[in-house]
Image 1 (cartoon, rainbow, N blue to C red):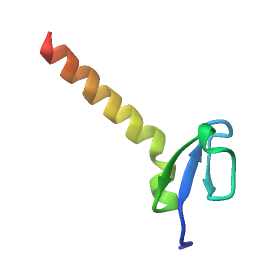
Image 2 (image 1 turned 90 degrees about the horizontal axis):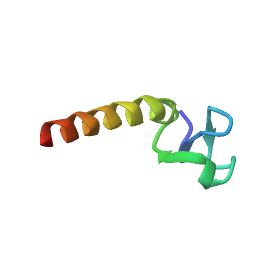
Image 3 (image 1 turned 60 degrees about the horizontal axis):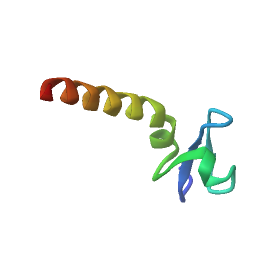
Image 4 (image 1 turned 60 degrees about the vertical axis):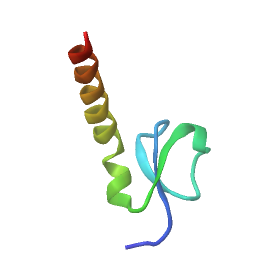
Length: 58
């Protein structure tokens, strides 16, 4: 496994190493390529949990 930071590029919808698109177009950094690959699913899961928490507050 490669050392360094990994990012998920929202422009190209792929995992990138440190050398890649500008950070404004990426999610991260992540410690591994696998973590970066799961960035969108993790964000979706968190958004769903936050939405459900907001509904509970109503």
